[in-house]
Image 1 (tube, rainbow, N blue to C red):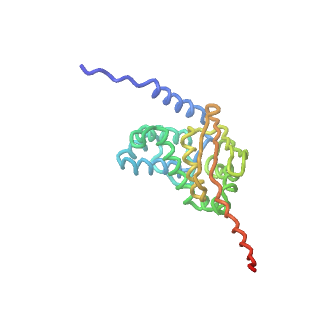
Image 2 (image 1 turned 180 degrees about the horizontal axis):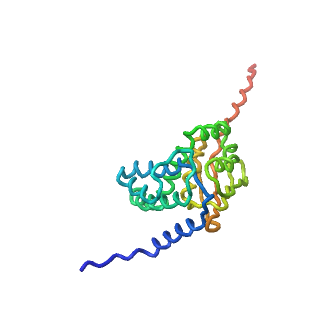
Image 3 (image 1 turned 90 degrees about the horizontal axis):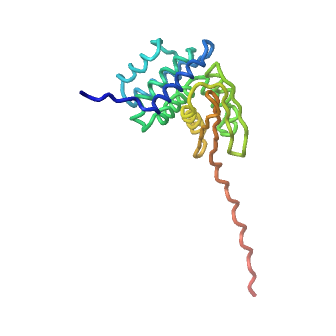
Length: 222
């Protein structure tokens, strides 16, 4: 008789965390279809079409349109399944979530609204970080977000009542900074509460051009 494999305590804790996040969502909490499509594209690239079918089966939706709104509770169901099936591919569920966040950002920035968001930053990383709260408002109906500057290239980005785990937004933020041309962007998320997180954002400033050395004065030889 083959022994049954019991689920690990850690896996049970993760599943419970997803369940509580879903229960906190209301009918008014929605996300754009492009984020669903970003999850499916990450799964398709990593594992193929069969895994995509598995992830689609986690929701009642059968078709997603980029800028249509869909319940975030459905997104949470899909993201939970996707992070589980992608975990072996990426060495863990956290990295799978980061990859999904990165793909979601690419999908957003390829849209007309996303291109406008990048244009408003005008290649200025600091301006882009300052505009992050408004960028999120274009994409989801819920939550509050703010930026607190700590230095020329260092900021805290705080999210209140956001449903996705921190690794997902680490991927989102890293990708959007990369797309605007930030040098060596670094994102570290920290959980403040069930739906509250903060992200320490830093990047390298461009190397200052050194002024040319002063010309050596002519010496007079007698």
